[in-house]
Image 1 (cartoon, rainbow, N blue to C red):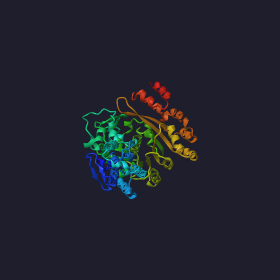
Image 2: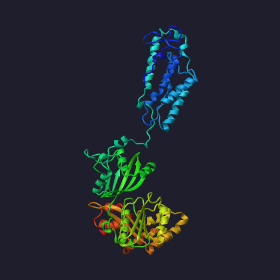
Image 3: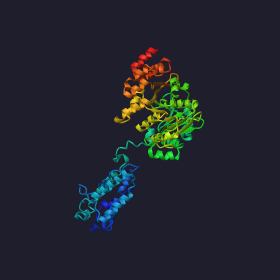
Image 4: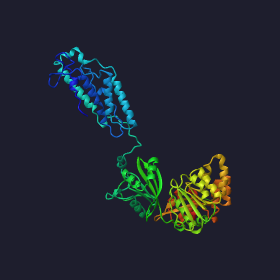
Length: 557
């Protein structure tokens, strides 16, 4: 901030008695001639410099400090020392000064604009307040030489006021920082919870394909990019870091944007959510979910092998292969996110593709496993690029002559109703839900509909259901993961319970129908424990009924 010229204003001594034209310079002790309008002009110059104090603390979007004009314009002190009043001679001069104040305020953004208006209103109010009498016309002002000590004191007071006004950032009142905004320093200031080698490279010289290849070599199922941590990978169900330095906001943005099409980039910038599929040639396919967190780009990538796993490699029960031979009905595969639902369905469709002559049509968001034409003709439609909605695609699907239909996810009552209708019209329909067991799956489907529709849906579901497969993945002792699977097939007893709304009795039917390939989740967990694939602690933690599991595990042992 430039220095104010206080001395010529604060020392109004006049040896000639004409205070309009003469004042005493306290440093030289001489009477100095001053034009009549000089005081007015200097006051205007003083006012025009006021915004500089506020603007020195304006960084980014921080609001300016409250400026008290009395800290800048000297007033008459209690000990009688004379100082010029904060008064302007005309409204025109006030307006011009305020215009200059507004022009020098460099404030951007809506919040800052409001602060600017409040500041200018505050200045206007103080300029228009009644000021003390003009000290230049007081009788005592003629004896300026005898009052030089007092005038020196006034100058010192004014300089002290100016020093107090020149506040630093720490002295200015600044509202609490918006907790939703995070800078790069915020992201990188906290020490990561993972150990990072000091020799680990940064990702600046790597393409995303290189990072994904490294994750696949470690047998990762998922890869994550987030600011403040190195690229993270899920291996055997646990998150571990890859050998890189922590990512910066510019790193995550570059890695992701390198593989995003212009159309998808525009969509992401608008919605901050994006799903798409991406293939690394010779390595694998990946399902991307890109999102924003703390104002920076983040991504989760699911590894999808180029080769679809077989039933044997997944250790799926033989009854699941039998289900893929059905010609109509509804087959649901359910479980939490990351439990292998997509892989199980892909294996069933691939088995159909190898053994039947049919038309397979899928609706996915996005396309994950790529199915080649083997014995079947396979058409895969992706949301947003091939169709705009699940419901619209399902409504038009009957005109596309399919035999087997895959619905990526039963999202709402419209999609569920369309899938049930397709199953009723003689198609084999596969779908997924995020439920933990078979009875909960039935309840979830029914509860989506209004109360006056639920009886009709129970009948429709009871007529079309072929099987519900619920699964979850557990870490396998020695490395890798194994699936615990609950299977309920659409026997006459199960369909009757669905129509009557007696889902609470389904476990009794499942337990007494093992000869038909049914099994409970607790029974499957007990078998994994019996064969030594999974630990007792992991199994009991994922059981539906811990007492039932403990009993089955004890029997198995």
